[in-house]
Image 1 (tube, rainbow, N blue to C red):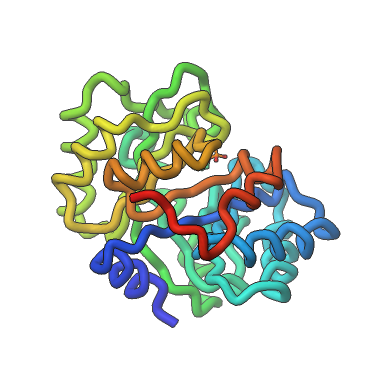
Image 2 (spheres, rainbow, N blue to C red):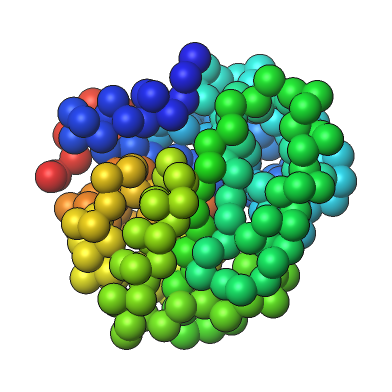
Length: 246
Ligand code: 1GP
């Protein structure tokens, strides 16, 4: 399988993608089977696994369990090197380009190589842009970086473009897990206009309307975590074969 090529093909056909984010910190292994069966019945196209504060080794057993229950591609969205496991299909090699902490721009990446060498993971270089959302999010605390202000759209656009020109294959606009409000339409559409690589948007998306708005603004792949964790009935609204409003 070539996960990146499939994402690109979906973008070419204007097919919208949805990743369910599983944070190993918030899931007990025994609940995975039930949760994943709901994911399988939904319009979700990908499962992302990652978090900011996961204990070493937990990601490996969690991904092993997830793979038993689904055919969907499992993509690591790691907050740290300890979240690398060969059991997944791909890994977003994230560079936090909204911040100026060298560890999260290149340092952790160098440290990760000895682990990545032991795997066959498809590595997808991804620019990661944290945008301010009214409250301090975990990414900000863990990485000790400032998110970008919402008001300076040009700076966000320029940051995304610089990432693309550096060779990043995906761009991820992040409001932070549990954000009060998702990233605004204006930011998404301005970034999308400038980029030729697929655009991921996540953080604070809790309703089908917000999901559709995010797609309509130009997101190619949307990531939702908290809304599914807090209210699994949300999956009911996102069952397969219900056409999304475009
Ligand atoms: C967080 O963008 C993801 O990294 C998803 O955020 O948990 O708010 O859906 P939520």
